[in-house]
Each structure stands twice: as structure tokens, then as C-alpha cells.
Image (cartoon, rainbow, N blue to C red; front, side, top):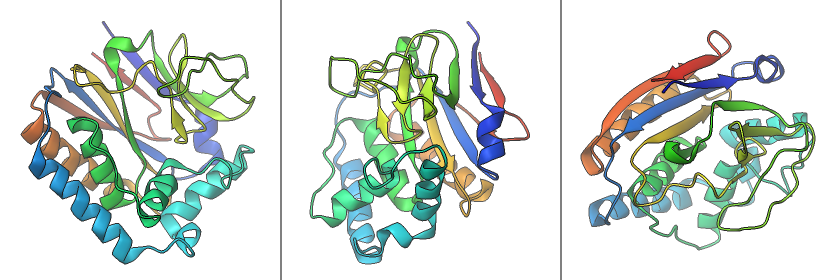
Length: 236
């Protein structure tokens, strides 16, 4: 089976320098917990508390660029904050991130360390091809851990397959259908870079993520970058 992964050329036109790193993971073992991995995440939480403040968070360059990107497609980042802003803000308010499973813990660790949005989807629950594009407004979206559909706003950036929306507002909120579960084995992972984050930042984050996945989950990994130079990738 070949799955095409495409990012709309219009997204690159409207957001110069944007890139998406992808990690294609096959035959992983996501069962169980790992205290070493959880401790590493907690250390990154402590580091975030020492670096960022709630008062200045929106001004941090790696976050401000995402807020600007959200505004470009008509979304209010105060109401719908980019995932990386929301993640750090949650920590600064005194919360700790729950241990969900190994892969999600790795995503959160990398997001905090590199200040980059990260996420993943279970490929066994993907239907057809993958596309990051602008919404028509009639797409099916069921939010994470919910069962009732919610409307998608025309013109917002969505990540979708042939049947449903996997993530709304670019990185804002994942859908429920393809969430990573302990039994997830074949997974597609996204690491997003918006200037001033560049290709070197994304590649560094991907390299460390791949090493952590190999250590804690095993499996086979293929990595690539989707950019304005090459907006399509095929998963074999």
C-alpha cells in the first residue's frame, strides 16, 4: 500500500520557510511505561519553567511565529493557541504532563526541548492519503477523546485523510480517530518548523526523537522533510 502525504503549495506560499519533518515508524512497541523516559520529560518541564514566563511567552520567537501563522488563516491565537504555546503555558501554570504512553511522552519531550510542535497519528486508522491544506468547511472532525463531531471553519488549516480531519487549525487540536494508543504500531509523526525555526532545528529534533523511539519502542524508522522544494512524500 502506498500512502501519499501532501502539503498544499498554497500553505508554503502563505508561510515562507515553513517545513514539516516526518518520521514514518513501523512495527513499534508502544506498550508499558518507562520511568527513565518519564523522568526525562519532567526534567524538560523543569527546564521550561526556568526559561519561560507566562507574561512573555507570546513574545518568544518560536511561539510568536505560530501565532502569526494562525492569524494569517483567520484564527485567533488567544482563543485557539498553537499547540506548543498551550503545552508550555500548561506547565507554567503549575501542571505536569500526564504519562499517556511512550510515544506521546517522546513527542512532549521533544516539543519542550526544541520548542517545536510535534504530533503523531496511528496509520492503521488513516483512510487514504494525508493532506495538510485549507478547509472547505464540510469536513468531518471529532475532537480528541470525544465522540460528537464539531464543525470545521472554512479556510482554517487542517490535516486530514480522505475521510476525516486528523488535526484542526494546523497544530491546535488533534482528532480522536487516529490518536496514538498503546497498541499503535505503525505511526506517522510530524515535527513542524516555522521561521525562525529552520531545517537544522527540525532535523535535530527528528534525530533525537528517532533515537528515543528506537531505544524505548523499537521499530523501523524512515525520516524526510516536506517543504516548498518537495511538497509530496510517499509512504511505502
